[in-house]
Image (tube, rainbow, N blue to C red; front, side):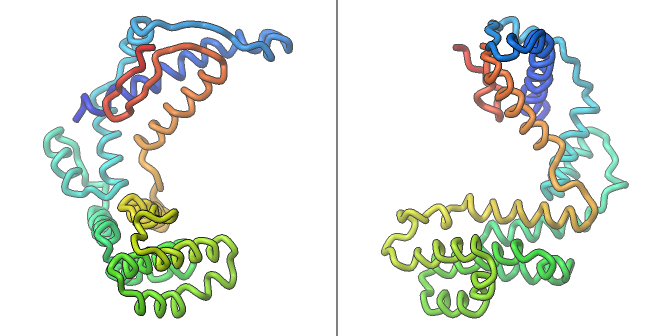
Length: 259
């Protein structure tokens, strides 16, 4: 597991350093600031810069535990903690388990089951967040369409989603796209087929997970996820400075572009 996460972390640090090293040169004067800086870093130089960044094993372990807990992977977190000798005594594993049940229900298309759990554990959450409530109910409508339960889908949309469409333009547009799935014989192949992709379930599950974390006064995004976003941000900054460097092209493996 350590080898899986280490390359992206090291790449992030290297990108930060590269950007920092060129920032003073890019702001020497107003005219220079408008002129792209052209520098080249070979892959060997880039890898050497990465290798110079020392990452403590304990820091890496904390990042991984933080990710597993934030995403709701309780069993994986417990197993990893056992293997590394880390303590989870300061973590409410019950809430982690509840978030996992909600995530699994949504990713399996059991939206009403997820809503029931949310209403039991955080009854005010959906009342206070209309967008969250809409996305859950929209996903339930999508699941009815997936099962070809046309009458049930029409009835559900009228009873549970029409009120959102009346008040919010964006929600009305999303509802119209969802209802348009009913027009196609093969809705998955329609222009709105993305709504029926498993990735859309995951998107809703992630949104609910983040909202539950905020509701529980926890951070809504894992440190590792933020670091991955930092990699993308820093690479964009380097690209904007017209710097050539071995770009990280596969975050899951740490693969660098050789060009």
